[in-house]
Length: 184
Ligand SMILES: CC(C)(COP(=O)(O)OP(=O)(O)OC[C@H]1O[C@@H](n2cnc3c(N)ncnc32)[C@H](O)[C@@H]1OP(=O)(O)O)[C@@H](O)C(=O)NCCC(=O)NCCS
Image (cartoon, rainbow, N blue to C red; front, top):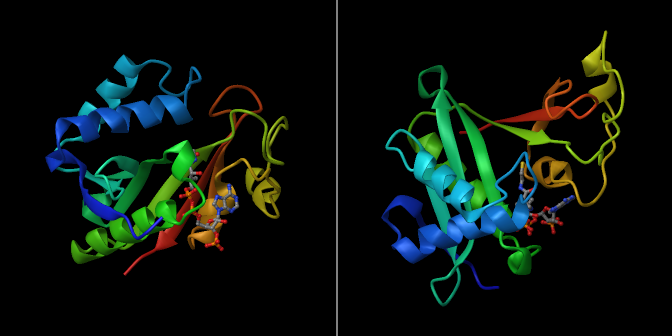
C-alpha cells in the first residue's frame, strides 16, 4: 500500500468514524474487547474527547485502514496509547508503524516525554501466561517469549521497551504487559 494519509479521526467524516468502530469489532470480538458494533461505537465516541488524540490512516479511496488513540497523564508528560488497530486486510504493510510514528510526532510537539501501552495476554500467547508471577513478576517478564499472533513483537519493533506486567489483569494467569518508549 502507498503511504496512507493520516488525519484526525474526530474531524474525519462519519463513515470513517463508523469504520473505526467496525475494525475494533473485527480485531477484538471477545468479551474483553468490543463484541458488538454498539460497544465499539461507544468506545470511539468516548475516545473522541478534546484532551485525547485520535488519528486515522486512510487508503487511496479515503477508506479507513487503521487508527490509533492516546490519552494524557502526568500533566501531559506521559501518554497512554490505546487503542491501535489496523484492518485485517491492511496488516503487514507498515500502517501500524506509521500510525505510531505520526502519533509520536504529534505528542512530541506538545511536550510529551513518554508513550506507554498495555498489551493484554488474554489468550495465553506469551510465556508470562498461565503462571503465578509472584513474588517477582519482573523476573518472569525478562526474556518473555510470545507467539507471532501477539502484538508484543510489533511494539518491540516500534521501539518500545518492556516496563511492567500486571498479573491477572485479564483473569487468573492472564496478565497485561506494559511497554514504554522515550519520545522526543
Ligand atoms: C498490531 C498491529 C496494529 C500491527 O499493525 P501492522 O500495520 O500490521 O504492522 P506493520 O506492518 O506496521 O509492522 C511494522 C513492523 O512490525 C512487525 N510486526 C508486526 N506485527 C508483529 C507481530 N505480531 N510480531 C512481531 N513483529 C510484528 C512487522 O513485521 C514490521 O516489521 P518490519 O518493519 O521489520 O518489516 C496489527 O497487527 C493489528 O491491528 N492487530 C490487531 C489489533 C491489536 O492487536 N492491536 C494492538 C493491541 S495492544
